[in-house]
Length: 111
Image (cartoon, rainbow, N blue to C red; front, side, top):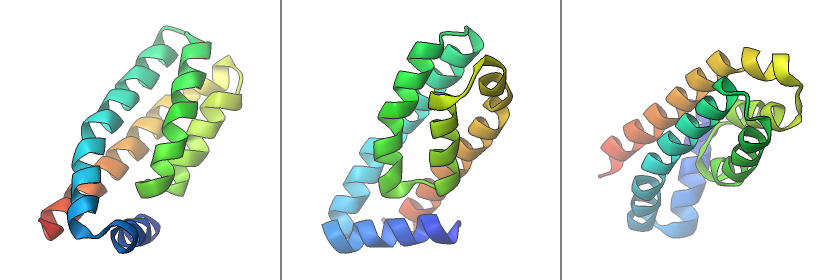
């Protein structure tokens, strides 16, 4: 588990309590998958404005339980040109996977 992400999850637990944190994360997981799929689809179909808007929406929630790396990649989606956005797809996919796997691991330890 990524130390920074683990610290964010612990902070969330301190702020909300264990039960509410579990509830928030269980609610968030399907939405993270959904956002990942939307961003990937928008990038593949070259819908840059939609990709940028979805990345922007995702950044705020990822800050609660995600990774700095995913946040950086999402900001790049917002701010980069077409060729750079296409190049980011693999990195973005790996980082989304890492974040969701870490959340799932955390949930399995705390449920």
